[in-house]
Length: 289
Ligand SMILES: *[C@@H]1O[C@H](CO)[C@@H](O)[C@H](O)[C@H]1NC(C)=O
Image (tube, rainbow, N blue to C red; front, side, top):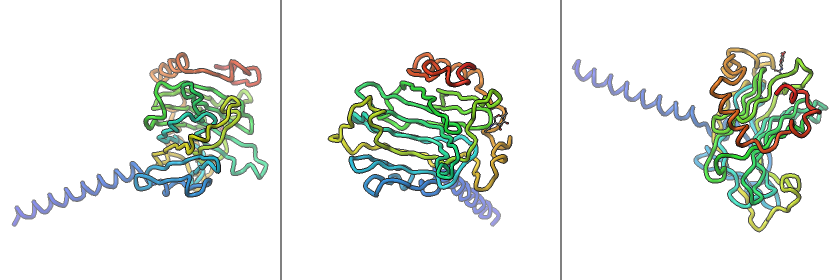
């Protein structure tokens, strides 16, 4: 009897272990619907794959498509796995960004933190990043990538806390924007939605060339809909600066030495364009780098 009991207990333990595994997996990969919603494009331009754990957006002559987070965030570590169109996609922009645009109609100056893939013009793909703070943008940087972003999913991430904004590609910091508000440089502070889209970027994204619509539709895939961010819906903005949120912890106030080294290496090998070398005089932060 005692023996049977033990076996039963053992079964229970196994059962709960199995449950925990199932829940842990669920926690690791939430579905699109849980955190995001489609805001642009008709059903022809949006496909759900992998039981809602992957979304494909497409663009053709009639429309592009986009989605955004249901909630807004005041700080966090935002990431997504993205695969961009595998065709000659000159003029087509695939974007993943944070934006406070929802408040623009109320006259609020807008903040934005952007990843933008500029479609391929027969050259290697370029990843552009930009930052707007209180409507001041014009902070483009362009990087070549050390892989082909059309073949596999890669992880693109934005760390945003009171001290710095860091853009990461597959865990490597490619860009750092520090909070230099003490020098009078504005720093993104407004609550933002997480947004992704595929859109017609001609002529600026295509050097004046036209999109080759014969190749349409162009498709991009997105995965990874968990959000590590401070919801302004539940907290006020200042609560989003709490040191108890892991991305605000002092180890995320600046890059550590290894990250710094990898970052310098990327700057040396992959930074193709930097606004600071071009219009640095217009931006005080450029004098600090
Ligand atoms: C920028 O840094 C200042 C301190 O230098 C801080 O008071 C402010 O809250 C920071 N801004 C944002 C938006 O985090």
